[in-house]
Every structure is written in C-alpha cells, then in structure tokens.
Image (cartoon, rainbow, N blue to C red; front, side, top):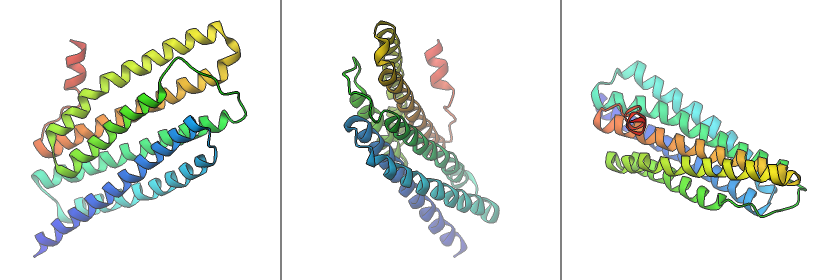
Length: 224
C-alpha cells in the first residue's frame, strides 16, 4: 500500500511538471507574438505567466525534494525525481527567456518598424517544435524522441550565428537601425538559449529512461 501511494505521488509530480511546461510554452509563444506583431499589451500577460511559472517551480521542487527525503527511491524512480528537478529548472529558464523577449519588445515601443534580413518567425517555430517534442518525450518516456530534440539543436545554433553576423554587418552599414537590429540579436539569443533548455530536458529524459548521462557526448561528437 505505501508503494502504491508513492507511485501516485510520482504521477502527481509529473502532472505538476507538465502543467508548468504548458505555462513555459505559452509564455514563449506570447512573447514572440508580441515582438512580431508589436502588440505591447501581451508583454504584461507574459510577466503574469512568468510569475506563475516561478511559483510552480517552487511547488515542484518542494514536492520532489520531499519525496527524495521521505521515500528514499531507488533505480528508475530515483532517476525520475532527479530528472524532474533538473527539467523544472530548465522550464523556469524558458520562462525567463520569454520575459526577456517581452522586455525587448517593450524597449522597441515607438521605434519605426523595419524589415530585417533574418527570419525570427521561422527560428521561433523551430524552437517551439523542440520544446514541444522534448515535453512529449517526457510525457511518453520516449528516449528516441528525446534524441530527435538533441539533433535539432545544431540548426538553431547556426540560425543564431547567422542572425548575429547579418545584423552586425547591417548595423555597420546603417547605424540608424541599430536599435531594431540589436534587439533582434538579443531575441535571437533568447531563442537559442530556449533551444538549449529544450535540449537539456531531452537529455534528462534519456537519463531517466535509460540511465545514461548523455550531456557531454553530443558536444564531444561535434568537436570531433
């Protein structure tokens, strides 16, 4: 009977984490929408969601640490709780990136809209796919799906580098658009960081399901 209760608590913990994941995805989506449409009012909503994410993070951590202390889990259950704690932190940081994008959008209020030679919407869509796939791999305990997320990260890194190179050159040629270009560079970086957090989540899913620590294997493979 005690073990049944313990596993019910694990289900509850997972549900709490998935609810937090939904908030993080919503915050990032709204922040990008505010930037792309110039709808500044959405920025306030992003800040409200971020506050909810911060509260959810504390709730998940408290429950996870309580289970570690009281239940002393072993094997896959221990790995699950440890993965939850780490994924919880990455979801909170995705919320931080969304808040940063909202702040950049507010900083652009009143600035003349201009066309930049980059595709932030496409980059945002790709990052959104990474986050959703990482969360789906968590929901389904699917390590192979998590591996697909990790494989997507290189493309986002390349896009971020492209944005930086293009816009730095553009600012040198047209200093009058520096405000818009600089904010786009920062937003691109926020998206790249969000992709990194999605990758971290995927790596933690693999650790939970397989017991394998793959955090540095992919970076080593790229270096070689």
